[in-house]
Length: 371
Image 1 (cartoon, one colour):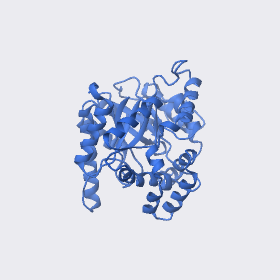
Image 2 (cartoon, helix red, strand yellow; image 1 turned 90 degrees about the vertical axis):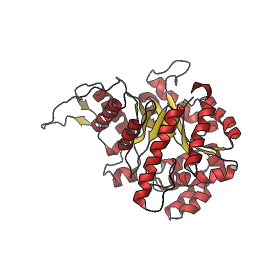
Image 3 (cartoon, helix red, strand yellow; image 1 turned 120 degrees about the vertical axis):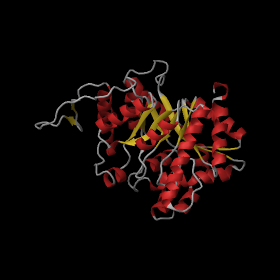
Image 4 (tube, helix red, strand yellow; image 1 turned 135 degrees about the vertical axis):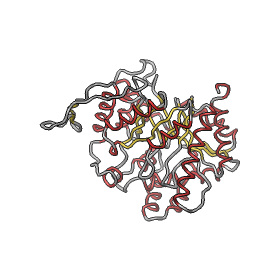
């Protein structure tokens, strides 16, 4: 099992990343947060972490920060978790991947996600329809561009060049460092998981509970089998299973769980509408249906702190690594046993020094003598 770090994004205070101790000025806080993210990536690089993931929502964008992380590091891969599919044409995403891979000497991983209706339609002005079909075609086009073929595509959702116009079939003018840049999908539902297994190189998971993961992993296997990927005995062979796992190294387990609760409340309660929130649905499928509904009610009425208080410790403990070093070491075995290949650490710490020590502890526990 390898290690990654989730650097998060700037703009929403409830999400995961090592956080600075900057003052109340929003601009100063954003600059301090960005520098803290870079420092965390540099330390992770030194400690042997394999990949630093950068997110985006409707604040900081991923490629800009990825380029800065790539410039300040030497060995660690730089990944997007995720680039929003409605935000960019597939050709633009391929251009970005090729450019970043060239600049970093072949250290880029491209994570993609469809986002949700509120962001897709409210922020990007792109209808949230047929997400599975659009994702399949989007990845097809990226692969074609990165192979440096002339771009022609006749799909249900994308047609290139546009017919009956001046458009010309073009090909990428730069050569990426690698012939194959890894593509990951952020997936929650069974159909999307099957698609990830079929067309992607890895899965970016959220709220991953090892003991309750078999249904998700079997969906990935179905996709791999359908595409003839992996081996007969192990369809997931060669496929990267990458959950983002909140981590808090603390003596008081409940205090650590409460640190993570605002992040869980943001996603379960606020990342979507009452009618369509993929993370809320996932919590329901894990057996927390009543709690998820209550969290959403509180969050959508502006009671964010109450929503965080309503996130059950049982849910947080099932999807996080919290407690003293020894407890975390014991619980790491659950992830190995479940087939996790890259465990992405989302650090929850109150000071920069505590965050740095957390990264060191995880490196010692997971990588040990491999460093």
